[in-house]
Image (tube, rainbow, N blue to C red; front, side):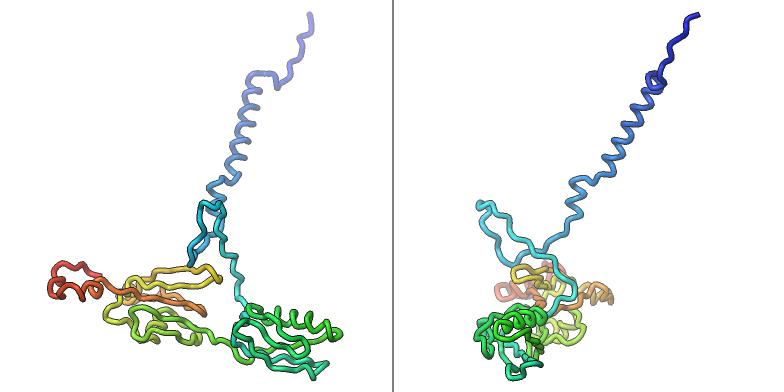
Amino acid sequence: MKDVPKVCCLCRPSALKACVMAVGFMLLLGAFLRPSHAQEMRERPTVVTPTQGVGDPSEGDEPSRPALQRRNPRYQVARGDVLDLTFPLTPEFNQMVTVHPDGFITLTGLGDLYVEGKTVPELRDLLKASYGKILHDPIVNVVLKDFEKPYFIAAGEIGHPGKYELRGDTTLTGAIAIAGGFSENSKHSQVLLFHRVSNDWAEVKVLNVKKMFQAHNLTEDVHLQPGDMFYVPQNFISKVRKWVPYTSLTAGVPAL
C-alpha cells in the first residue's frame, strides 16, 4: 500500500479560512486603535479670538496663533517702572533707574539699554552680560521699587466706568459693585469679559450676570486677572427710548 502524502495543516481549507479571518481581525483592530484624523483635530488645543483683523486671505499666509501661556507668568518690566540695581562687589555702580517711555533705561558706565518686556530674572541676566564687558564676573541684584499695579477696566453701562486697582481675589460681580453697579440702561444678561493672553490676542466671554442674581447662584462667576476689561452693553429699550415714546413700547417689547 502506497504511503499517502502528508498535507500541511495550513493547506487545509478550514485552517486557511481561519488564518485569513485572524489576519483580517488584526488589521481591523489596528485601524480602530489608530487615532483618526478627526480625533487628532479634536485633541489639538483651541485658540482664542484675535482682537485685531488678520491679513488679506489672498496672500496665502495663515494668521499667527497665540502661543501657549505659561502657568503663573512673571511680571514684565513696563514703562515707568523704577528699578533698584545693586552690585555687592562693586557698590560704586549701585543705582536706581526708571524705565523711559521708549522702554530704555540709562545705566552708569554703559548708557542706554532696552529692557521693556523683560522679567526680573531675564533683566538680571541681561545686566550681568552687559556689565560683563567692563566688569569681571559681576553680581547684579534687581529689585522692583515701583511698578504698574494690577488693574481692571470697567466700561459701558456701569455706574462709574474707569480703571480700577485690582486688589486681592476679585470676581466679576465684585468688580461690577466696585465700579458702581449697573446703570438703568444696562443689559446685564450679556456682559462681555475680555482677557488678554498676548499683545495681539484676547479671550472673550459672554456672561449672564442677570441669571446669576435671579438664581442666587454665583458658581459661574469668574475671577478677574490683571488687565481684564468687562463691558456692559446698552439694553434695547434705552436704544430706542430717545426716538419712540416710552409708553408705546410697554405692550410690545419682549422681556430683556
